[in-house]
Length: 319
Image (cartoon, rainbow, N blue to C red):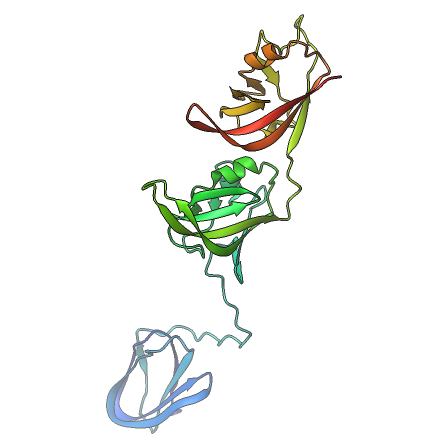
């Protein structure tokens, strides 16, 4: 009778092999490097094999060594079909960070998802920068500086950059696909908002790569009346229609902001397609007429009656 050979593939042992009778058993263990173990065992009825190392694609060959030995070999539990060993290739290390986060030397690059991609809505709508639960930023609060703008209360409490929404409110030119490159620089001293004491915090300089030049100014031409006998702007209405093309320049609808006219600060709002709260502005400029331009420019935040608002200045160009 031909000798019976049984091959078993083990990865996460133990694997028990039981012969039906006592007799010599030829045991051969083969791995990727060739034969790892070969021996003849006598007076045994069972063999238990345990792979205690990482899965290595080992194969066990068990066969009887004489007539009637090792017949009807049974494996408990049934072995899986041998899986071919993967060919050796150059090691590829998967990034330990979020799919949009890359570390290059001292730089942390965070790519903004483009429209239609998974996290686009996170930063474009909710003003939240996704960096993942495992991220390379410093623990605790840190400071981010970008072209004169300073964000002191930034941290990563979960998977998002906290205290960073004002960056997106200011940089309305971002469309998606750009990279925010954070470069670690020397620690800076700032005043802690909770204790009021001076504390040292890690600091990153931020630059935007791949974006269009920031739009710092827009102009709105005072339009003529449509159906009304007089224009829809002026001291009587105190509103200014905002064309759709320049609407992204201003803060989002239903958010208060300030229009600074020389030394006068007007707290205004965009409810839906127009700026409201400009009654005092139009009263101060009674000579404005159809065709004149109002040129708006982004400025630093200002404080009015204890509250901080985004600010744009306005300049009148007469025609």
